[in-house]
Amino acid sequence: MHQLLHESLLCQTDDPQEHSPLFQILPGEIRDSIFSYVLTDHPDPENQFSDKTCYTRPSWKADQSTDTRLLRTCRAIYRETWFKPFLLREHTRWLSSPDRAPPSRHRPPPMSRMLKRIADQQGTSNVEIERLRIFAQMYKLEDGELKRLLSSSYLAPRIVTLTIRHTDWWFWEDDEPLRFEANWIRGVASVLSSSTNQFCFELESLKRKKDQVDKIAAQMIKKWYFKRKDGVVLYADATTQESQWNGSSTWNNQRWVRDETEDGRLDYYIVTVTFHPKIDIERKGGSVSEIAFNAAQAGSFDEEEMKLHLPGQSRMEVVRPYQVIPRVWDGRRNMPRNRRINPASRFSDLDDVPIIPPQGVRRNDR
View (spheres, rainbow, N blue to C red):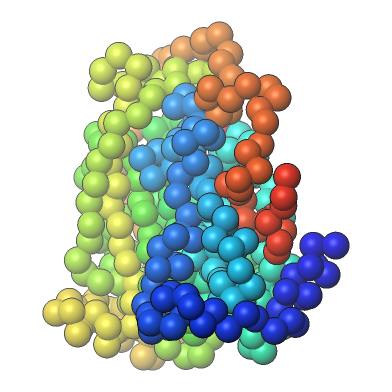
C-alpha cells in the first residue's frame, strides 16, 4: 500500500501553488537548501544510549532521527523531497560482533531497496548519498566485510568514514601494540565509487597509547593509497586532526580498571587521517607522501610493506585488567518497555522508513 501511495503521489499533477511564496518567489536552489536543512538527521533525544557500552561516544550517543512531517504538507513538496531523508542522513553500519553495536542497529535492513527505488525514479545507475560511516573490528575488515558493503548495488557515497575504536584493535584486552594489516585495501579500493572523494580513517585508542596512534597514522600517511575503480587515486593528506574524549570504563559487565585515569573513566585519543584525490589536497595547500605517490604511479602494492606495525613496542602487564561487576542493561537509557511511538514521525532508521509517512567485553574475535 505504501508503495502504491508513493507512486500515486508522483504520478498525479501537482497543485501549481500560485499563491505560495515558497514556490513563486524563492529560487529552487534556496528552496532546496531549506528542505535539506529541515530533513537532515539528528540525535534522537528519546533514544539515548547507556554510557556503559563500548559503542557510546561523543558523536554517537543516540539513534539518529529525521522529522519527516514536511513531506505531508503538499504533493509539490513531496515530489521535491521524498528521497532527501535517505540521501542526507549519515548511514551507519557496524561490521562487528553483536555486543559492539547498539541493539536496534546490529542488523539493519539492506540499503539496496531504497537505493533502487531512487535510482529508478531518477533514471540513474547509482545514487549518491552524502555520508557513510562504518565502525569495524579488525577481523571483519580483514575478512572482506567492508568490500562487500561498498559493493552494494546503486551505492555511491561521497564521504566514507571508517572508525576503528579502542575495542576494535586486535587483542586490545591484552594491551597488545596497535597494528593494522593491509590485505583488505586492494579489494576495497577496487569497489570505491567515483563519487567517493573523501575516505576518512578515525584511529582511536587510549590516551596513554597516543604515541602508538600517532605512529600508526604517520605510517598510514606515508604508505597507503586507494585507487578507485575509475582509476583515480586517493592519497592521505599529511595534515591530520586530533581529538580527545572521556568515557565510562565499564561495558559488557566488566570494568577495565587497568586503563582508568580516574574512578570509572577512561581517556581516549583519536587521530583522523583523510584521503582525497591529489589535486584536491594540493589546492588546499597540503601535500602527499612521495612514497605512496610513486607506488601508486608504478602500480605497486606489497601487502607486507603496507602493514602498519610497531615492532619493539611493549604492553602493560597487569594480572587482573578488569573487574567483573553486576550486569547492567546494555541498551538505551530511560526508555520504558512499552514506549509509545509518536506518530508525528521521528524515524530512527530511515532504511526502514516507508515512502509515505504513516498516519497514525568478551574476548575479541581472533
